[in-house]
Length: 288
Image 1: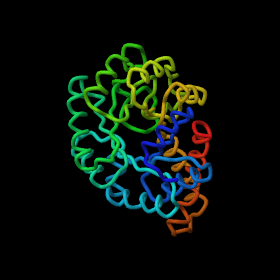
Image 2 (image 1 turned 180 degrees about the vertical axis):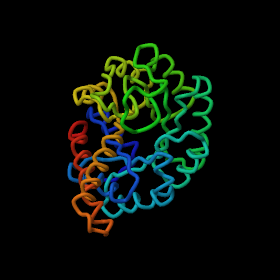
Image 3 (image 1 turned 90 degrees about the vertical axis):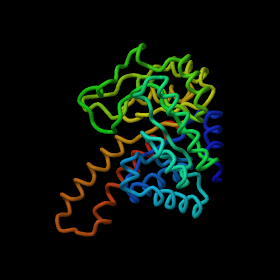
Image 4 (image 1 turned 135 degrees about the horizontal axis):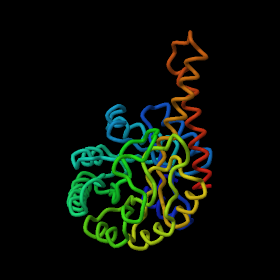
């Protein structure tokens, strides 16, 4: 069952589905994601940003995910989400991550191409089996609740990823996956739904790229837009902010309702269960 990530991505595209990518910081959250995926028989990607990897441990994350995959013979994979230096990309690849992301979206096109190409070279030298993802189009950097659009993010035709630039980016960098700006953003607007996705653009970008597309900032997007994006060629959907909100809300309630409890695993269990429910909802949307 636990074939290579590349094979599961190809299968998802063929079936017009998308693999869920869910970020975690702790072991209890990892188990929550796994339980939801296993219940729905969906392959799943565990993501850890630079900060999350620093907290969890790079080699430790690789070891824990590998142990779950082996024990349960299950397609659970690990991605080094949003690395801003080639050194961090190389570190994760060497540790045994299944995929790595170099985020050069804030750079100029030429600078992004040069840096991403270098990241691809170093990652594959460290681990020939690793998938490398690049980003083209800035959508912000932090998974958090927002009052306004992140600084530097504009959701209009001029600032969204252009097919001709994406084709050049993919050709010159050699990435396996690419994350474009299509109306999505990192984080979730506090006052309501996030901007709508440009579905027509997603189709054009998929044709121009010739490789699988990844939707970052999957929190706060209308369900209808997510479903249409998957049908248009999105192969992986990232979700983080909604998980963090569910986890924190449930943890605060757990602490409030159990003022005398001091066992961390008892206090954390409701938080992991709340996260698990969100993961299940998302997987039913773009995998079931």
